Image 1 (tube, rainbow, N blue to C red):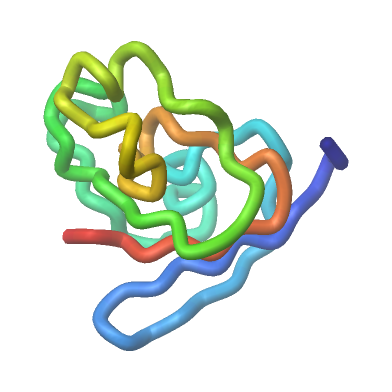
Image 2 (spheres, rainbow, N blue to C red; image 1 turned 135 degrees about the vertical axis):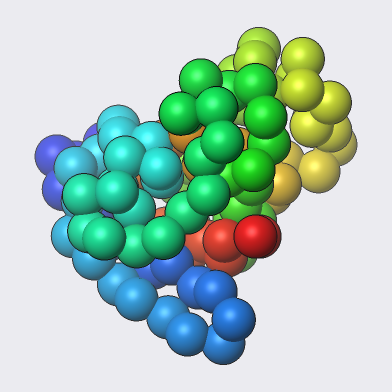
Length: 96
């Protein structure tokens, strides 16, 4: 895992690529770069409003909070932006 990575966020046909630190959550990366991502619970993993779809890249394993919120381990591309971490270059779509 390198220290830095590039993360591409997609939403409504728009795409923004930013530099990020490996190991940060997608919500942290979005907030640091003024990319709007809903997070009704403040990033605590209890609301699912920050849902993302991982299109490509090196992403952390699904967390216990994500499993408790009903995310399917058989569909690992659907993740919570506040829980999933970029471990390397990634391409994600913001669901809401």
